[in-house]
Length: 129
Image 1: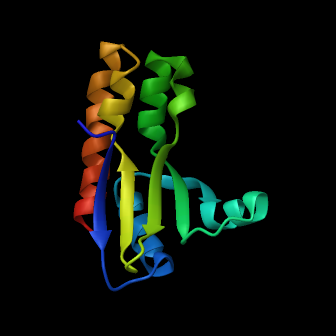
Image 2: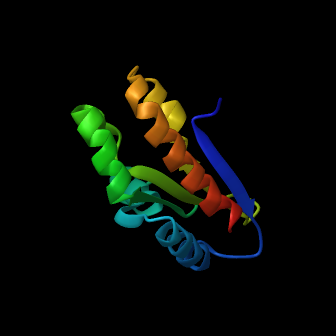
């Protein structure tokens, strides 16, 4: 099983698509806590050219509370990363962590239900874009 789920979208920009992604995340109870602009960081730190690539740290507080109550150190895997990356042909890839795969590595079966539910919500976001 892949550690992420993704979708390719043509005929748009990262800026326009980001708005739609954030709207769909909100419908599923997520907010965006952080943003990392990889293109800008790689240019500044390594003077290396990247196509636009943004990482959004999305969090659903209800599920964050559930998994933290079960496994406090799971905070090392939060928030859920959602990426928007321009491809060489101009299309945009949206990719999201697959929580059931990522949290499966923890080895705590009590996390399974919440991880599956979060994964279903993230897949719903992808399907609605």
